[in-house]
Image 1: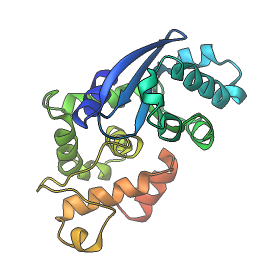
Image 2: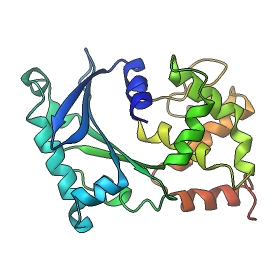
Image 3: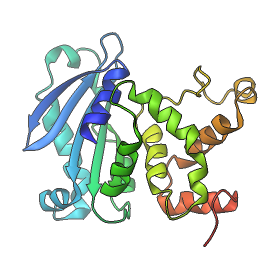
Length: 231
């Protein structure tokens, strides 16, 4: 996950630098001419539980990590309104089905940084990564997968990797969905969406529905829309 996410960030124009802090896998991302800054944390669920045994304090521990990381960020970025444009992207890998027990509590705490949490099952990531043709122009290939495999949602037992794909577009602020026929969709403008193909429009609508929903909540929406069957 780490290599792909950081490659997507670099494709989006971010400069990535590692940060050594608290024995955690942290990276700092910045644009050359844009005052948006990102802190990346990649961690296994087991290590997360070991580091923060008292889960009720997890969101505050995440804030401490962000604060400590700021001490290692060069002054030049702090002079560019870092405090007002700082986002913390947290990727939590699990070997078991995801319960999403961490996401909501962490993301609702807006102190220090705006938080984005992506909890993912290892097998889902392996399945998604296997479908990427190469590690060049990853953003383009993710958009292609979004359109080409949208029908996988009809198979309830096999759609979890696709849900992870949708979550990438939600949890990565710098990752935009571009229709396979080219162009960018700004804010679901009505005139633009009218010109989209059926597959592109369906995928974009699914991405919208993913925001702030758990897997189970999103699955209920898919059932209501008859996109998947309740087997």
